[in-house]
Image 1: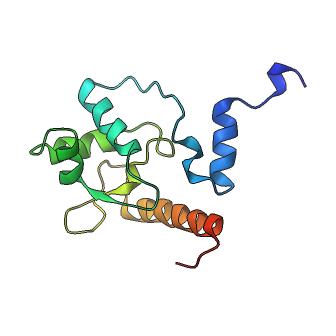
Image 2: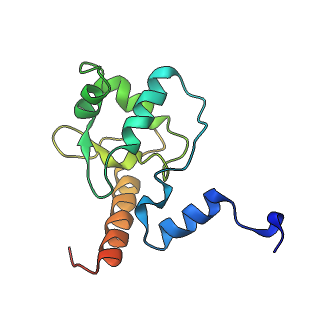
Image 3: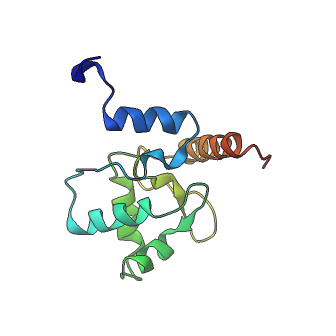
Length: 128
């Protein structure tokens, strides 16, 4: 098989992700070209374990900006690669989904979380 016909690291990771290995995309290098603040938020997003959620305020505190939950929401909504940088793991402080951008709605985020939970469940053999 020639190098050109072999799947790239990203393709292999995404195939593994959709085959149940949620963490397969966790170490993929990214080049998102955001501001320093956005990049800090996106890095913090990547540190949220699969199947878990945190609030915007918690994420703001984790990056050393505890009063910046709205700015964290905007950065979260600007995330260009949602599978690799899991923006759907961030919720409002009351536990509800809070769309961070016009293209981000409760239904879409809930669907992403359900996919993640189902894949985690299938890979562990446990029923949630």
